[in-house]
Figure 1 (cartoon, one colour):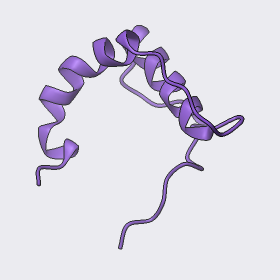
Figure 2: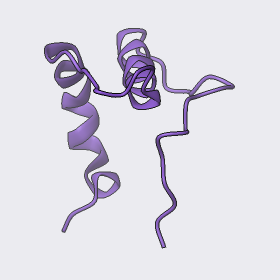
Figure 3: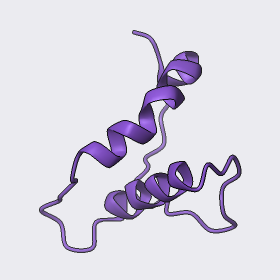
Figure 4: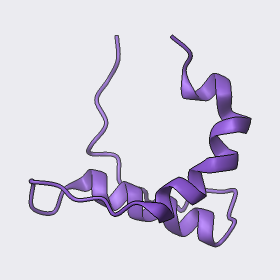
Length: 64
């Protein structure tokens, strides 16, 4: 299985269009993943290359 990190160039090339094409919803009220998606949309819109000081990470889980 290829990780997104290994395909960074390809993923970053299309990620902005992908994020803006679809509307994301969640069954969870105030889902932190939707906050993370909104942040990514904003970063791609602003063509920023650096994350903000505070980013939502509560949707992440540790991988062993």
